[in-house]
Image (cartoon, rainbow, N blue to C red; front, side, top):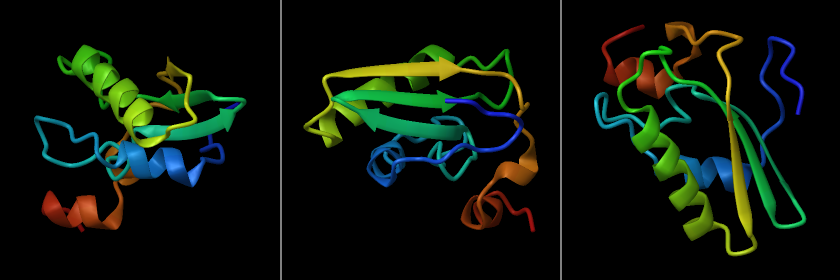
Length: 107
């Protein structure tokens, strides 16, 4: 899955599963936070490309575990999950969904 400074296509089933992964510090799911750059399901293998709000994110390990668990729980066909944590493009606040912006008081 190539990023080329833009979001790749995402499997809607994976995005639905990842909406259940809520950042414990912000109380907003990682899809609406704009942390998920792309996903793909092929032959039972799920591949997710995502980032964190900062490379020093203290929740990285917990969020990665939550991503794996949510996908395996919500996609019965998933046999394995691979998550590529990337830093390019860097996350920025304009990646927030409109509802996330509203929750955080941003417009």
